[in-house]
Length: 277
Image (cartoon, rainbow, N blue to C red):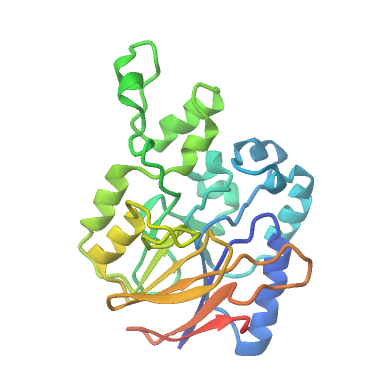
């Protein structure tokens, strides 16, 4: 059996995540693979914090040294999707060497990892109905505006301040279509936002691309984060684990921050949320 752990949001508390996973190993045994549902926030250079969008409380360049020290201590195979608080200049213009070859990542597609025969599909980012194409029709029609057809193009525009860096956080319609048309049935689907048409306050939202992907691929399990709360629910035959944020208090781990699976070479088995409530 292989032991697989999917973790929720970490933000800038990578040292806390290392401590938590070491504690988990003391309880359940060695961990063979870790997956993240985003907002891991691997800011290894202070200058990269300018690519973090959202509340200023998440912008902590003073923590860069601590993040780097924790990354040096990281010992588990790690595969991630991006959330909405990330160094997207490093992820959207992917260079695995920058992360010392210790990280696997995907914008939208099958996610590489270390476990043979386990199929994991991931989607980076969150939904914005006005940002489903790389450029707006007006931008595409403006011959003076640099054209963009890829994430690398978008990173270049963001670095030169021609577009908002926040636009790197939103996935695109062609990515959703590509995922829905994958000829696989995943064992595990990773999204940052919940695959649900119920919003954070229980309100109905008109569209959930995450839910569309889940319904098209029918994975055995799905994991998500983003809302900083733990929950479990089912969508047809798929069991969904919404994962909590790690903690904002040192040496504390919120209940349901991660889920632990066993892999027998064919199926994911015996999911357990950790820490328990």
